Amino acid sequence: MVGRVLARSLVLASAVLSVGARVWGDEPPTATAEVREPAERRLTGKDHENHRFVSQDATLSLGPVNYMIRYNSCVDDAHGENAAFPMEGGYIGMPGPSSANWYHSGFLTLSLNGKNLGSVRPSWMGVAESGTRAAIDLVWNHPVAQVRLRFMGLPGDRKLLAEFLLEPKEEIKAISIDARCYPSYFTSWNKRVGARRIQTNSLRVKEGENKQLEPKDAAWLVYYDEVFDVAKGEGEGPCAMQLDPDQVASVGVVCGDYSVETRCRIKPETRKIRMAFWDFSKQTNAMALAEVARSSGKTSSQLRTLDFTPLRLAGFDPVGVEKELTEALKSDSVRKMVGARAEEMLRGLRAIKGTMPSATRNLPIESETKLLQWCDKYEPFRWELKLAQLLDF
Image 1 (cartoon, one colour):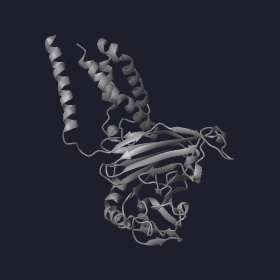
Image 2: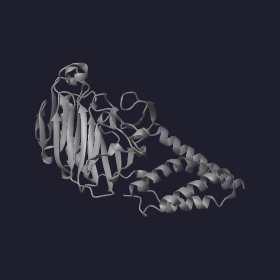
Image 3: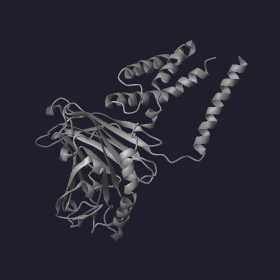
Image 4: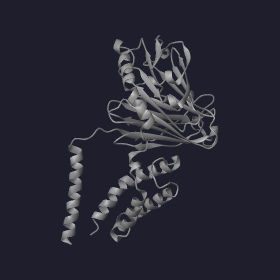
């Protein structure tokens, strides 16, 4: 008996020392993600009097820059069951790192067969990955397709990657993505005149110009203002976007004197649409232009080859975890301490296993979402389970 107690004490001490070493030792760079609880308010106005308006924020902290993503829409039942009404034309905003640039109330819009994704409420917004990389998910059950938008950031990076994953319910004949920004400064709102510009990998578009671009001429786009340049002590800095030209049919830009609009027509057979976004907060125009041009090759490779599967799922062994839980429940002592929660975890895992293939990469959206939600509960519980097993003597 004494030997068993001593052995378990040594294991516990070793675990504590291991944690201490991770806390006090040299740590690899990290990227973290957080999704806050949704906030609600009641709207006023002729068409939305007393309607429910919901907003929910997520933060992806990458080291050099923290990105904030916001979902917001009127979700009142007056618009229909599970329906949403995007205000100001948008529903996926980027309030940070700067107030200008990618629009805080709606910078990114997806349409399938001419139907706006934002016309339905998302079924989930949550953290997909945090620590080694940062990733958050938004999931929609749209009439045309099941859709997941995953934003991902890598530690030490300045850009935010994005992937729309589509699982069609009907033939997809048209895909378009609209992006809206206010480069560096809200000119008209502040009653000032700027000089908007879009620099692509091969040409420049000036304020007042509307152009249709070939995909090869719009692999990346930097949006800036020659008046509101941090180098001149004005504005908040530029923003940028990079595409995978192989996925794009055409790119149209409207370089207005206030907002700057970009419409990307995506090849309809595309199922994983990938993009990269930058907000160069407090950076000069020259710095932003140089960084995007310099890193475009690496970014292109990431858009084409990076595995967006959350690392906690890539190595997840559902059979092994099921066995771990089953074995733990054989102990009377463990059952007394954590039995009810262990059985709940086991039931949840078995239900998810029935909807997924054996591999945990490239899972269907619904299966992966349920597994991520299950892992959110299991990961902290697993330490309680291990402690209960150590105290089983």
